[in-house]
Length: 422
Image (tube, rainbow, N blue to C red; front, side, top):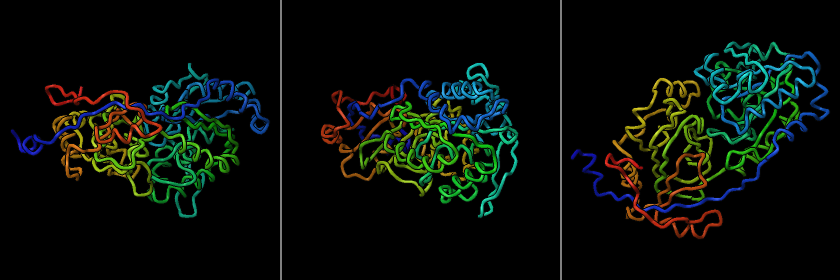
C-alpha cells in the first residue's frame, strides 16, 4: 500500500441521496415569430437599405437556438434587400485561427446552408481608436469593410469580474469582434478594470463603425431563452445593465450557503469558459467577482470530450484525478490563461489515482471534526443542476427548502474495481 492509500484508507465517503431542484423555467416558445416582430420595428428597419453588406457577428458559446436566431436575423436583412454575411466574433477562441473559428461556428450549427449567409473568417483586425488609458481598440477587418454590423449574443454574469455590464452585447463588440488582438488588449490590464474597459471599448466601436443593432437573449436556469430584445446602439448602452440584472435573477444555483465538499463530475469549455461556472461553485479565478456557496474543498473528476483536452478551470479545484490529467491538452489549456492573463485556473490541482481517493482526500482536508458529518454535494456539471446528490447531513436542510425535494433514500456511493464512480 502506498503512502496516499495509507493516509486515505480510513476516510469515509458519506451515503448520498438524490435531490430534485426547481428553478423558474419560463421560456419563449415561438422564438422565430417573436424575434422577427422585434426586428421589424421602425427604429431598426429605417437604417437598413437595399444592397448594404451587413456583417452578422456570431460567437463561440452554445447559445440556445443560436442557429434559429442567426437564420431569422439573416432572413430579415435579406427581406430588406441587404446582403448579410457571418463573421466569427469570439476573440481568441478556435485556436486563434480563421479556420478554427469557422470550424467552431460550424460545430455550433452555423453554416451557409443552415443560416443562408456565407462565413467570412479572418484574424486580421484594424485599430479604430484608443481608450483614455492607452488601450487600443480593434475590429475585425471584414466587419469594418461592411456597410453595417449586427451582433447576436446572450447576456449573462461574467465569471471573473462584476459590473453593470459583464458578458453580453458590449463584450461581444469589444472582445469578440476584436479577435485575438482585441481580446488581448481588453485583458491587458487585468479583470480589475474589465468592468470599465469592456463598455468603453464597445462605445468606441459603436461610434466608429456602422453598428446597427444587437440581438440580446437572456436564458433561464435550463439554458432556454426567457427574454429577448433587439437593441439599437443607444439601447445597448441604456438597457444591457437591466438585462444583466435579469440574467442574474434567473441563474441556476446551489441553494447552500456553505459546503464542506463539492464534487463535480466533469468540466469543459462547452460547459463554461472557465470549465465550470464560478457563479455556481462560488470559486472564482479572480478576486473581482463573488457570489455562490462557500466551498471548503472542491473536486473535479473528468473533462468533457467536447472540450478537446482544454481543462481550464482544473486549477480552481483542490483535487482532481489522473483520468482528467491523462486527457488534458496542456498547450491548449495554457493558451487560455496566456490570453486571459488569468493562469490560476490552468494549474493542475492535487491529482489522485481515482475518484474514490479524490473524494476521500477532499473529506480528509475539509477541516471538520467528524468526517461522517461532512456536508457534501455532487453535481454532473454546472449546467445540470435540476438533480443533484447530497450527503446525509444536508437532508434536514434540503427537506425544509422550498426549491429542493429529496427523491431517493440514502445509498452507498458506487465505485468500480478501479475506484471510479459508475
